[in-house]
Image 1: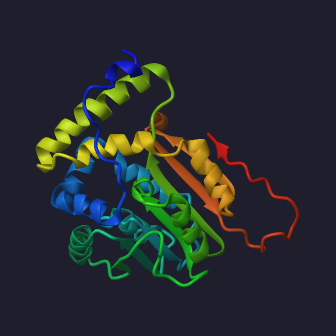
Image 2: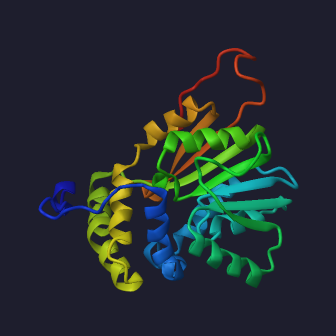
Length: 265
């Protein structure tokens, strides 16, 4: 089976319009089944990926963490439980129903250090240089202006603060890639549609992943935004990529020439 064999050229694809109101409405429509479907469709690996992202931040004790595109707050909760004992975690998302479910989860878990707020990744509700770390879990591809969102994350980070972004990818090994694309384009949308009762959301998922920047291009975008020591790490054979970067401690232009190329593993 080849990658071409899993495409469906005669069937119109889902809309990739990333108007915030449209995307928020789509996620609100599947909010009540979102966490369960994540566990099922990732075979439970999503928990491991989030732990790896938080570990990559090297959080100092008592850190303040911002989780962008927080959804139902899974990554924000993972950060709050980190052994470094963060002082505060703020999750931001534009989907009101997702946030409502996240708040219910936080109340049930008694996690008072995590707060959720409705907001746009391209206009974060935080002062400049106010947080120690920024995370994004599987949401950066849904943002209308990726470059603007990355610039905002850089703005709100303190000098020396770190960024960790998880996003879906496509394996590069030919045989694994063929199987994965068959599952991702054929099986996942049907299962998601059956369980979520939403015709569009789980067709949008594989289409949005395929349309997103390649790992090296997104890593380069982080460098262009000002992040240094950018590392792009394949997780689970490239099904997911973890992007990690740091805001320089020194102002731009101080300390000599920096390497602005991402390291890809």
